[in-house]
Amino acid sequence: MKLILLFAVSSYAIALSYAKDTFYNGFKMYEVSMMDRQAGRRLDYSMLENNNSYYEVYSRNGASAHILVHPDAQADILKLLNANMMNYKIVHNDVGLWLQRDFEMNQKLRNLYPYQGKLGTERYYSHDEINQFIEDLAKQNPTRVEVKTVGKSFEGRWLKTIRITNGDGRANKNVILVDGGFHAREWISPAAVVYGINELVNNYEAHAQLLQDYDWVILPVVNADGYEYTQISPDTRMWRKTRQPSSADCIGIDPNRNFDFHWNETGASSDPCSQTYAGPKAFSEPEAIVVRDLIHSLADRGKMYLTVHSYGNYILYPWGYIDLLPDTWEDLDEVGRAGGDAIKAATGTVYKVGCSTQLMYPAAGASDDYAFNAGFPISFTMELPAGGANYFDPPPADIDRLVKETWVGIVAMAQKVVEKYPLN
Image 1 (cartoon, one colour):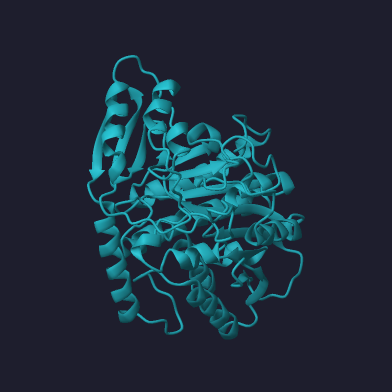
Image 2 (spheres, helix red, strand yellow):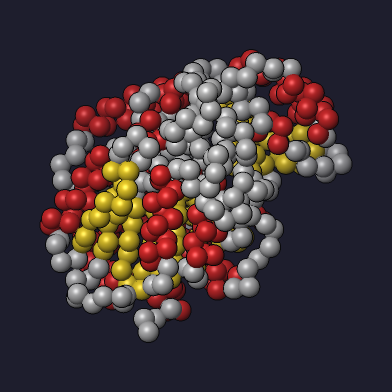
């Protein structure tokens, strides 16, 4: 299998990269079965991933994978799939066309719904708007909300957390730490996190139990530079990494492979042009340093760490660096299944719950493993549902449904955590 793949991709010797804007006109999205039609062999995607000028492999859920394919690679990908007798279908014939329409819609909605002191679910918001929103919440609720500047991105954007309490003034409560926007193109992640912030602050009565003995500390957008970059044009929409140069030719490090726990092992890359490049060293990225410092500053009180991503309908727990379960996996599973069950009961959406290496793929150097190892007894990556032509861009019309559904799961998990880990 690997020899066939090597032959298929080696015809593309020109080393383009995602360092430069990529025009997606004519790109197709394939859905490919993970098993061939005869012998049941798995397709090895590693060579495709290593040639990311022409291919990008998206979510692999055990049954299928999505592969974005450059127009010049259409003939070779078909030869590869047919030679290996893989079942496949083209799910989008022109991803660029969809991205253009999506960009135009977001621009219209931004003009139609300018920021006026609150963030709704009508559209996606910028990093500056999100920062302004949490600042406004702090001014409106000075006894229950505190905003803290915790660092700067590589390009100098302020990274801010919001701490939400019940206002009783008690110190040393337990903590739930939440972040979003690790990967730039996953816009639904900050949207879901912002919705949760709004619920905890402005719908306090419904969530008073979750704030009785717990503070919530939330960083809405980790990768602020990348997030802003994806909003410039349709050509930048699919950017994933940070914006710090990684080599003479390429830009960006995967911030969720940049943590110093089994850094640059399985599931991470040492190629500066790779989408999963772990960086020249652990914590090379200021954004990862910010999350690291938050984790350590709260670890003595932290009971749950939740990082929100997309896509895939998963609630994932450690370990991500190796296909092994931690000793306390049953606690993790219990809390995760509370979230998954709540979502299914509320909307019918099914989430898979389990170890990330077993349900998806290895991802060494990730924040959830790091937080768990640092002392958070419950640590999850929550992968929200797919949407749009590239699966990372649910249309604005779907935001309301998705963020409310996500919040149902987060609340259920938080309730289980409050029950399992009462304040001493």
